[in-house]
Length: 393
Image (cartoon, rainbow, N blue to C red; front, top):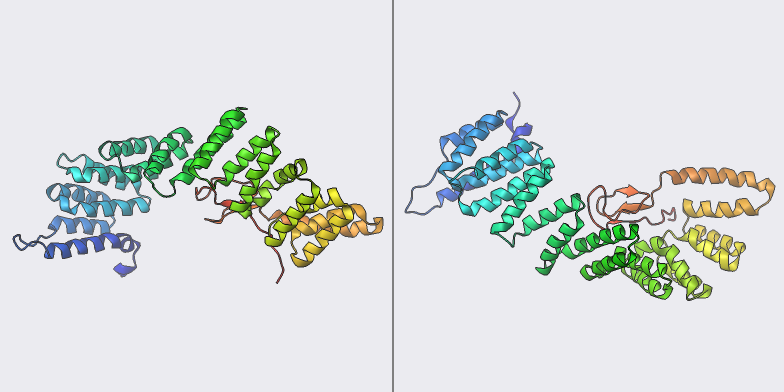
């Protein structure tokens, strides 16, 4: 015979059993003027149905029982949550719909039932129904943070950035944590849309709004730098780009081409070379060797670029830098040595095939494209450029 404690059903219902135990303890400590309360026999009958996987019969019993004693409603919430986490959304919905349909439902439980039913609809992918329920919660409780945050998630999934901003700005004004960064991203989304339509004025306005909600927004700073560069204001663009470097050095490879262009237009080659060298000394594992070598080649010649890459590989060997050096050597050395370098180049290219340029610092998702919203964990601004994978001990 299978041990009850080893079955998946028992593991699934453990939180509910614990909740029932706590309820009984509280009942035992109830007021001396009343009799100690007990769970009705039907409750244990329902529990027995659950243990035997007869969920339909169990649900019918539990939904009817609550009518006579609303103080056991927490057990219904716990049971529905178990079903929802187990992927049995229809059963969770049935519990909450049964509760909300009861005319005797106490007003103090109505908001929680609506929230829980909204969570069920979200889990089922019924966004319109979930939105309606969360809005209904706000009718009676304008301060419900849970309802507002879930509305934001719905609008985010629907890419309705204006609605997401409206709700997010409301939470931001109430001082809720983490909201400003989200609203900032929504304005950046609008900025990108405006930019794609050629409305550079609106794009700049939305980018500035993004900075208002998150002064450290890397994305907004890059958008504003693009705007200034497109208008020939390279000094102003450079200030935005240098703010990116100060706020999060991980994004330095993303802005490097823009920085090079701004320095070339304003400060000159010597300051650019000095700046890149300083950055590299402070952050030696940044993946900028290839572009740094190109800048050196432009202003100091091919030999200087080869010397730089050779020194970098000696201290921080990685496939990308070695491939860059081989490219120089292939076009520079004697014909007899070209075959050797071409073979080495092929090997390095194979090493690079599985490498990725970006990784989410929250869930580990990897990609060769920069995503501001991680496709895997749906976190904002957690996908960043990868550092050099060096073999140095």
